[in-house]
Length: 297
Length: 339
Image (cartoon, rainbow over all chains, first blue to last red; front, side, top):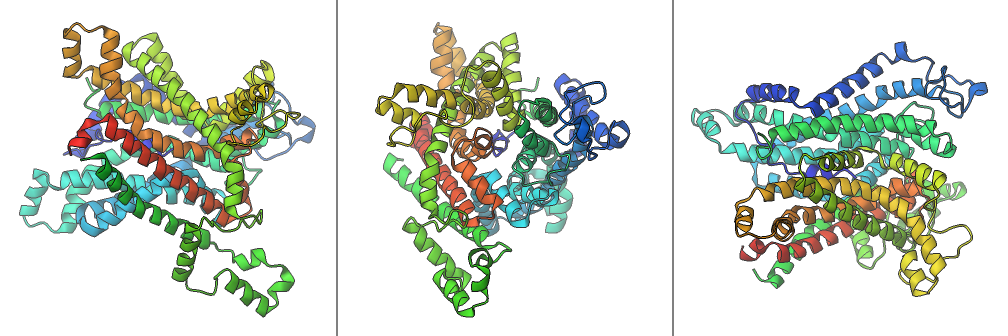
């Protein structure tokens, strides 16, 4: 369900003449925006919790204590236990170790693939550009999650394959973005100046144009992380991600459905997903506001 | 540009897209590591080379991929989407059985989402930076950040299990019979048959899933309406309208809103396609017998013809809805007519 975010107005993601000053002024503005600050704090807390999960967790996330099964949250088990007596709190902590790297991998690899393909298409133009644009339109027409389901089903369910599936279905929007930026910047004066100095195409593309697309691509990627986390959780909720015993959040929720009245079994992992996605949306919204000249004060 | 030329142009644009959709569907449905022969023939038949060859010939597997594609395309034109490996039924029949439930859910969800989203967006933009504005923005944030399955479970716990306001999973209660099928929409069919009890039961089952799906839509619509209305309210023509002494309500509803809704119309098409797909998660929680559950079962049993049949159908619906949106645009935005 997340092609939508790609359709938000992108005119604000313009190429900037100087990436470094752009990043610095953005960072300065960010500090003044409380929602963004809150988002950054939540994300950092989740990263720390995931990194130090082995120290913070009170139990082994996989160890079963059948005598303590289905316990409501209490002093020993802060978030209760599941149907096999595993500690939900420890499992939620360990869940961050799966979701955060998975989402980052998708976003980073897609930015790289998308930037490369989009830049080439935008710069070379002609038939290549035409092919890329038609291809991305096709991708938009297909329902993301069903396409990802087909890919995971073909490769077999696992974390790696779910990540692969999301990479496969999400790169076109990145390519579209970079292509637009390159088309816009291609005829700017500074590019003309470099060209008139006799620079090669490779030089213009790599040294002049690409650095200016990095900042907008970063912003777009940060806007996209939330969607990727939701899609990843959706896939594993459907059983197309990690194996059943894995402390992955979406998977934990889907197991919790069979124990509907034991609210804690699905509520805590679900809220973990929601809080992380919300934090990334705070950051993404803030970045968009800062970059949008219409809302910038 | 006249309307006819505009429509013809749009159709011409859609043809390569539809062909592309069939190519992608064909490639994915056939690029499976598993050999369909192993999946479809019993073990003892696999040892019989004549049977295997007959099977290959029957399904065109002995031909080149390009030939296979054209056979596939020819079948498609006759409405033949292939046979599901799992249910052994023609996929078109399966789809006809499961589609109405999904269409009913998705349509009601988008109506709920649009109504809530547009009203929230307007309220939020008109009283910018007020408490209402912040509440709406928090609601919109929750709508786009909470996983649908979490919203569904919270909704079921609060409104079904605790308060008992709405019915739980399924389309009808256990003892209620399906209404005689006309449209496949239980709400409409029960009304047509005059079965009021069935109607209320169907409606009560529909409320929660459509609110859950609709909350995602309304989150997005509220955000877009808000930012687009804020932009319009700053425009010169609004100042003109106000200085003419028009009532503020006329200025907002008649002048600003009608322009601000153009971006909303643009994404309705996309949202509808996404709703059909997003129904996969919602339907699995609400035990809603629709396409989402069908495609989910297909994906767990590696039933690729079925998966691709469904995604191709959704892609085609997406193209069709966007085609309608484009035509709607023609009436909404006079600038297109001048091009």
